[in-house]
Length: 107
Image (cartoon, one colour):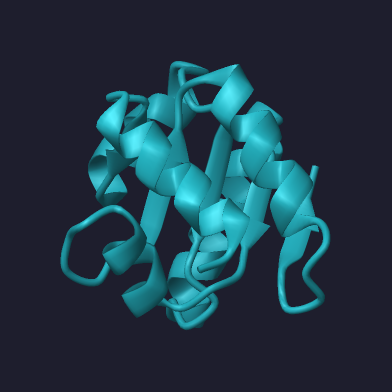
């Protein structure tokens, strides 16, 4: 398994990961989110919504992986959007995701 995904699993166990549209939106608005991860197979509408919201609040957005890998990395069913609320985990995940070509990263 990829190191970025195992970082998500660690963040989940540490209680530093939020999942679900509304919860992630709130975390972006309150600047609690340090990194937002969106599944590359999310709908165009969802991608645009999170791109705009993250851009407005200057939250880094990572688009990559599919909903299945995101879900299984945190021990849950499919997930489309996740927010990392800890700077250390966000940095770790960005570092490892940056190595992969299939990930789009927007600062």
